[in-house]
Length: 393
Length: 219
Image (cartoon, rainbow over all chains, first blue to last red; front, side, top):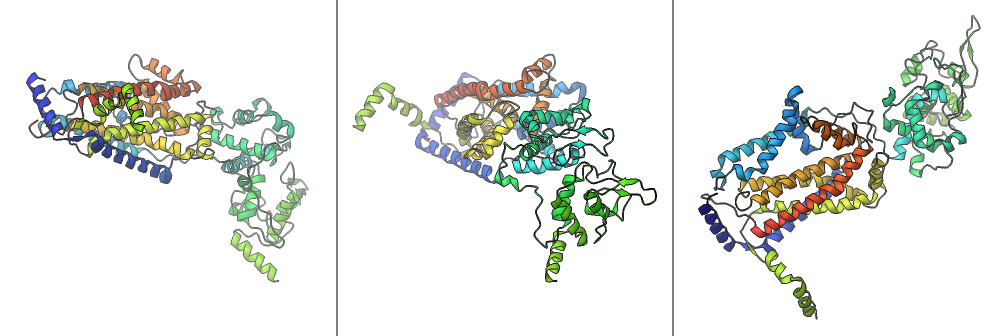
């Protein structure tokens, strides 16, 4: 900048100061007002929008769609336009040049004029760049697919429910619904293996949460337990494994006490006298805990699936005999009591006791009986109507 | 009495002088866009204060980072508020700083005699983005883990030194406890130190040169 321009600017600035205001209080007052407004805005955002809950980092879960903080999205999106060999142009050259240009701006723009109408080129370049950044950010938001909601179970209550669910599906067929173990029946490759209990004091007092999680993740492959963690070829994410461990710890370890608000989670409600149980509230939960581990597709189960109400009534090789409304000789009720079903012609056993390793609590066996006697109501409303009708008689 | 205490302090600390040079000075009449700088300063201070509070409970290890934040959110009195302010404040700070930059650009305020103020400002913008990048990993959740994986991968594509940068960022070939430790140190010690020093230089220049005026048509 030429000396005369410098002098000219200084003069003008002095004049502007003369015509201006005092820093205190005129400017400070505006600053404080804006800062205060922003603070209120922040408190509002925190209170009413909050922070989106996220699951714990899981290096094995490569299905997660990476998304940077919103102010890096434009850069992230920009890189999609420079793929492959010239990637470095987008990741290095252009950002480096942009930063350099920004830093060197006072040298690049030697024009002494300041009003925007006298700097149309510069203003337009900046305008295009900013519009481009906004456009790329919007494009990134629109084109990034919605992240499948991960199971972000953060409270003990959520973890208990999730853990119970996963334990029922993946663990019960060998370890039993209460971790009691015993002789494995009906599991391919492990038939007849005698498993020790995993819910005993010995186990609970000597295995830390980390050990339990590692066992679930890697398995005990020499002993026949397959790996369940994603990292070792299984299906379970880290959060899911942790939930199973939480479920085991709070259910079987007598040193820990379940917080009160979490104790009701996933519990099977008791029935009162004369109350008719329903699939919705009672049976589905018992089935979930004791049966589903084997009675789902691709397991050895005489093709009898129990994942839904419909499946329970209509699938299986012995379909028609498993559940008969009002019939105490329904196969399910007999096997639940430990009576195996024999083929009427050959006399061979076609169904063993159920569950195979250990019968359910009497309370649950009884609940199934009342349910079958009352025609196996599906919904809570149906069961309630039956209860009311029964009490009228 | 109060007068004599003030005089005693003033003689030794130069309070009147500070008041005269910083507060009681004439500046050009400006508009509301000129509050963006002080708004960024305010948000920066808020980030500092809430950040210090968070560091009381936060544990920078893969085993405990996530749980320590869950504890801050559920177990600590007003922990949700402090973390929420830090979380949202970061986004808002980036916005105010960016608009501040655009305002300075639009009025040509980076020109003589404020070139150096502009340099320090650009450095501060980069510093703020650095804080955003390093802070993003600290909650150690899925979002932060994978964003940092990709972010450091991008740094790894720099010609010649890319692999070196990648390993410096991650402290190895993969994201690990070392990465978290390094990002934490960057986030709470190294970057803040650099940023505080640069903010001081920036403010010194703003006070020394005075805030710019709104240019008229023939300037």
